[in-house]
Image (cartoon, rainbow, N blue to C red; front, side):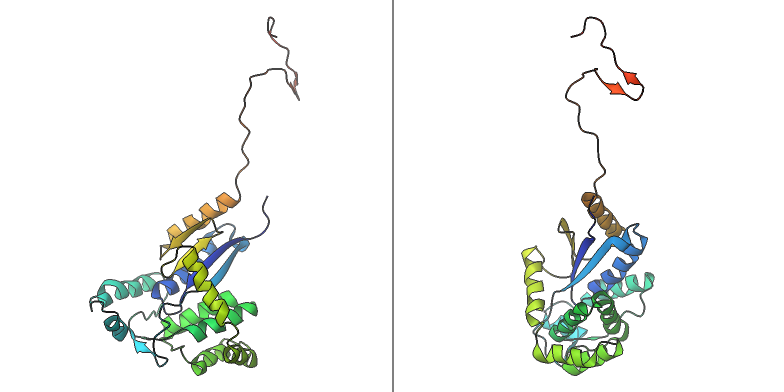
Length: 245
């Protein structure tokens, strides 16, 4: 029987509203899963807008820059906010916020992971951005956040100054693309199957259950290929019928 934890790899960007919602849903699903303590969540980076200006742009400006219709706000983003509110994740600013390049944020998250606080800090960053509409694009903004969540100030500053996590962040994205990701969120369950995009908590729980069942199959009796009746059991040994070989 397998003893190592089942792994869920979760590729996301901290400015992706579906990703913040899926982080919340993943917590909810694992709280309901009977073997949640034996599941390891591994957050990985997938930058959606690396070329945005460091000062950031508003969500409305980004929609215009992408050439998308203004109706995207009411057709896509407001429903995400309503879904978050219905699931107890409030406030949740998918529209009234600023977006920027998240390279430094992801590098801090990689540092936090090496400090054993990866999952906790990913969730905190989602809540800072979507709950408070926080900007997390400049070194100063990211280090202010690091101090608020109790990461070592000197270690955080060195991680961003040296850019020693830049290669890891880039490698995360290449790996997601190799596995078939075209965007975020992108979840991979024990390297058995992937879920591209956001799904509901019930479907997420079903995916976790499926991956667990595949990794922990219930032993089944072997198929019988002969009908031989010469067998001894705790109740005695069988006697062949007269005339049988």
